[in-house]
Image 1: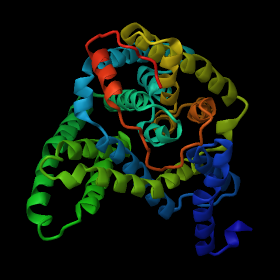
Image 2: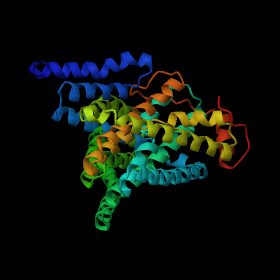
Image 3: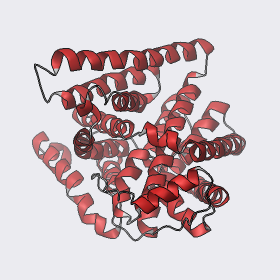
Image 4: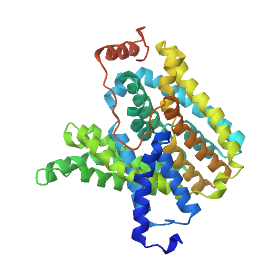
Length: 409
């Protein structure tokens, strides 16, 4: 029945579904990303619509590229440097947890080392773009939002590097070639930005946004060809543009951040919809439920405990205050979706394991909205409360190991 409808009508229905239905379901604290994913599963495996549709695929690619471009642009290197001690400790704890979970996954799932590491990354890596989008609706203080943002970005940055090495480690030659290409990209991009600023901007003002998107798409396709998916290239472009802001301020200004996130808000729903299209009924069989439940029972308490205990030991916070930072860092939706797809395409993991990872991602993504009784995020610009002088003093005290009152407001 649906196959007989005109193509234009099906696309109109798709736009309505992706931009209206998620808003309607937000009242029930269901994130728009989860709704879009469910709509994709209903349209693809359910009704056989939009399968292998090049238009949806292209829009999906723009969505994932813009999301990670935004995450890269939002990396404040100065913040990471200023809080380097706390961040370094946080990352060290995460690295140990990654190793332990990888060993446990390899043993429990009877998989090779690379697959085990990817499963561990899928379980432990927060999705920075999604989390940054959700912060404004959780009603947190500027100080709590600062730590969530900083720790999430630092964790995802290291996770991207770990994913790159893991995927390219099959052969030393492949890893070396990929590393050279990625390093060349980092070295060449500033030159490209300078040439654009010198030769193009004076004669074609206000073209920075289009240029940034174009460069991000090109670099995303380069890293996709390297076998590490689109997100690495887009994230690298965002970081390089952020570092280049002194020479071309418009490239990484607050205005550009807003523009990129507005661009992402249009195309990100297509990414989640497309992710739903490639799901199969077998992915959600009864066999997938034990895997999903096992991932949740093991990984969620572990992740909450790691953040809370570190903050208690390092900053003297109570367990409740630590959870206020830890819970919003739980969502893994984008990163888990990407890695799950890689695991299925490159390593042919069983459908039950794939489905278990999807179940885990969906549940962790919905936890913060229900815990904080806040509206679910809908791909909007996060309104993060600024730090007041007292909060800035507290963070500075934490950096130097002080014992200032660390209660969250």
